[in-house]
Length: 322
Image (cartoon, rainbow, N blue to C red; front, side, top):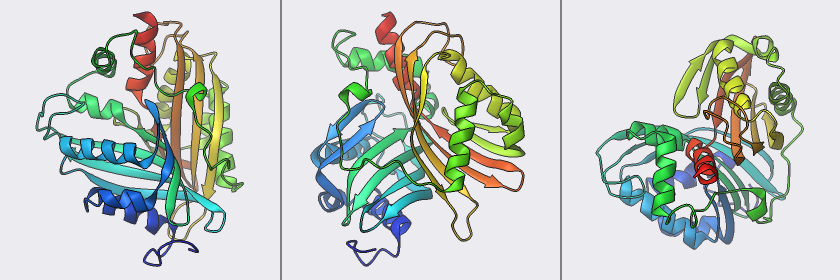
């Protein structure tokens, strides 16, 4: 781990360790140490430049959810300490809505949801990040439908004329990380499978997915079997049948005591011109930032984790339709 604090044994230990130190250890000041001053953080809702904005957002989240935990489920990574490393960190978070904030008045409701953060790190600092939270799961547990939360956000931002549609390539910033991951076979296999599915080759699903697979999808939805995988992917693609699907980044890993696994970040950009997961066609221009983790076994894909922000998609649809 050349260039990194020797207290960290390897890259996953670094990623999981600093996450716990910052959030549960209340070490927000360490963001000056672990995040570069000009870090670029992309999420479905925005692009933020600079660690001061990250610190402010972290404080606001802790004020609303003071007991929040971030339990690291996996870190799928590529690169080297000398050239820089990219981690795809899957987190299971628990929190109690104990304070007023962006989700409204404190409700006391206990939440469970996932986040995946893709972070580039070199010399003990993160300087580039893609962050996706399962916002659909959060708001549903608070009793709000994702499309209604999108309307609440638009109103809070001053109405349709003043509201931001969120992230898209036109507002992106060029960061220090320009890699595409690695060439490990498991990342290649999963990227090929996603490309087949998005090309409407849904016949690939019962062939490539284990019959006993476990599936974790946006909105906190858990499924099992290729039937549930088909239902999810078909419904998503049906909403955007002509949108461009693009693999943005892929990693495959073979590690001791772990199944072969993959992390793939992707985008879907185009018109909402079909019936599917997002209701009646609106013809809205939509950009979806998505990320998936997959684990493989002797009978195919055993576990799949897919994240994108449903509220960010609905916000773009509501802004377009009024």
